[in-house]
Length: 559
Image 1 (tube, rainbow, N blue to C red):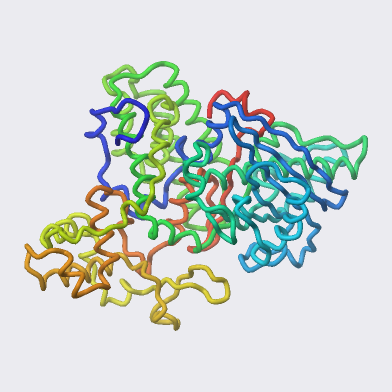
Image 2: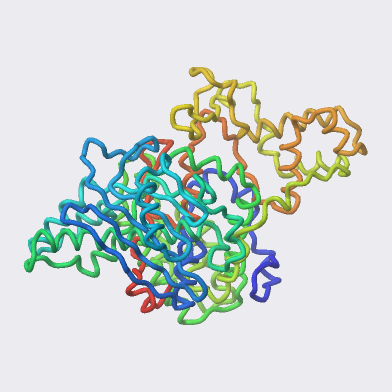
């Protein structure tokens, strides 16, 4: 890759994994967050640039109702999270996207809002979709309190007691967001309007800043309510317990199609990770401090895996495999791995490929990246790209060249019999009630005539069949003149010539396809942890767990 500001590592090319291995859902669905995840990129930038933070507004009563404002002050610009806290009756609390009331609502403001802005936001942000925001707002969000924990923590603190560490670990958050909207939704600023700003050039940086500041607001809120309730007897949440908390999130099928609709971004996210792994494996030697940092990361991963729980049988099995795999890595590193050998990191990786299951292999990938920030952090500049630049179709390409690309990069799709009921068992559509993508059972439910074009494998196979009707030296333009419905698929195939990670290499309408694998892939890129599927179609996660807060960000040694 050439977009990173670091010197290239030419020898890394031979260590890059084959996209045919990487882009299968069975592996993507076991992805782990890495130091190149979007939230880690944000934290490092704010630390590196010595951002400052304050809370100029915090007007909230004993019932947890009111408003607050948090400012993140960068070297050139300031961003303000405006929060509105509500006392929501339990019977109105819902994580569904069609909910109309929440415990807290938020907007990330570009700059510092004045009194008029705050009044405008107060009239609109609590309404979410029913309200209106402007180009001054970068995100719109809402969150609900944890039914299990929030009141318990407030009561404990008000009585001068710390809540149970085990209870906090079992949930991992005091609030969970049910949506964090950005990129122009509901009138907010578009992503394109922010790409010339270094701090928002990487993917989803405004959204990550929003969630990080929500985390701070949540802890401030329980401390404040406890103090008002308990007076002099109240105590704030202890630092270690505070650190263990993240922000929860419930994510469903609405997120999954993003990976299909944005093949350029998917390619970049995966290629950056694979390039980072290749650079680490290519190192001819290591240093003691990097080995120490690796072991620290391994210990932290084992601690996280021990606390990570799930009610879903599939995830429970995966967790068992992960814990066993991490234990194997720890034993091997302590007794058999020679960090002084030639290319020691590659030797460790090759051992893992032979011995570990896929879950632990992907965990090992994240661990190998952890000590090597000087080598790989510059790759964060390669994550984003103007997708319109890759939109044009090369109509002069020969049909036989297009066919060769199809055979090379879509062989997984061409081998499927889409006449088989199982192979075409599902269809993607937009729910009329929820206005979000959903997955239907083709032969059991109505609506397949409104199918979304996410059946990439079937489209690839149909294009391949059509190409057989044209001479090899015919231009692609002639094909598209006769069959314009193949335009989208031709574009995707041409993309893979230079973007080999642009496609999930699985049949996305197969009856056995697990949408949660798509969700985990994307959420790991964000930096999510503690994946807890509640079905094959939605998952709970945590963001920023064990990360620093604004008041201790600059004391953090490793980000």
